[in-house]
Amino acid sequence: MTVRLKEKYANDIKPSLVSEFDIKNPMRIPGIEKISISVGAGEEAKDSKILQNVQDTISLIAGQHAVVTRARKSIAGFKLREGFPIGVKVTLRGDRMYTFLDKLIAITLPRVKDFRGLPRNGFDGHGNYSFGLDEQLVFPEVKFDDIIKTHGMNITIVTTTEDDKEAFKLLELIGIPFAKGRE
Image (tube, rainbow, N blue to C red; front, side):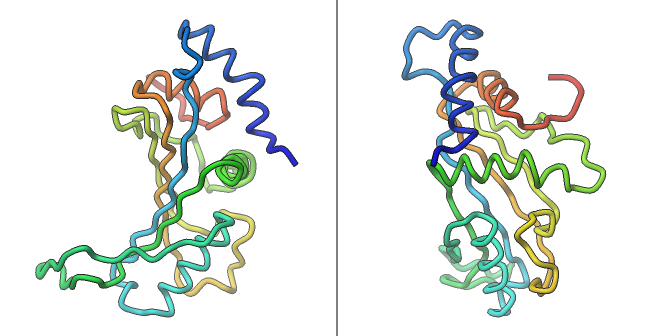
């Protein structure tokens, strides 16, 4: 089974990017390398039931097992000890990445209340784009009754280009709904 967005990238988006940016080397054509989904647990990290619920929810959303991240060093001001759980993350590559991105664009983002597009200022200067969602309930596979506490998540799309303009055009052609306004 082929992934719809992966086919669209190979057949439509790649040739468009080559012609627009006059790319001679096929290895320099911008593409998506990985998608990282992360949740900072904050105070909820002390409760193992809530942390397990967050891990299960992110695993369900991503279609891949999420891992608990742990503190690398102690910070007394935050009452944090080395090895304590601080969040949950999952990194998607390949077909799962394209499937998640397709679901995000076509199903999830239209379900966000008062959605006017993703901010254009989420690029980091190296071609990567990050944005946040306020709650996990916008994903169709999440059941409201199974949630102990709502939480947001950070989603980072890592591209193979170092140029923000190329990355913006790639994501725009893929179908990411950016907010109207200045570029």
